[in-house]
Length: 194
Image (cartoon, rainbow, N blue to C red; front, side):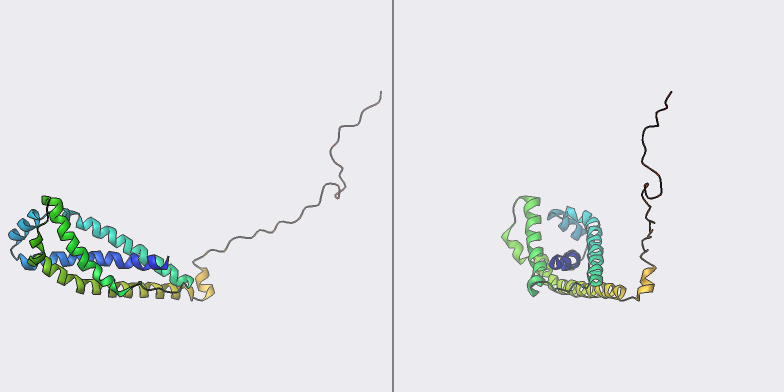
């Protein structure tokens, strides 16, 4: 569970870094906006219209992850970092796979000359600094969320009571049984004699 908690804040930031590196590589290779739009259209980048939606979903996942990190800090659950520092290599690999998949899905084949195209080389080169920045930002946000959770946990008890209502306790007085009060149990009425 703790491992997945770290991914909730790391993955959206790495996705945003992947998109930012992708945009920057194409912007540097094709400085003219018309040439860039033509190159993007020819290489299967029509999905870029959905990037704002994907980034919004990523922001929601990030906020949910930070809320869960705050809860974990409040509960005192120890922090566990990601398993391997090799996670930094995921965005460059993802970028290369993304470029090949875009060509393959758009044209039906991916040319092997794609490996030496400047957009792929620059894009892969930009992914490493963006991935490092995403990891650093994720670590800082997770640390801040856990610190907020610990601060909420360490609030003085009366101050925290204002946030959580105390349940109402009603003490019921025990009632004496019917015979103890002098009343008998219910019975049929007396028969009158004529």
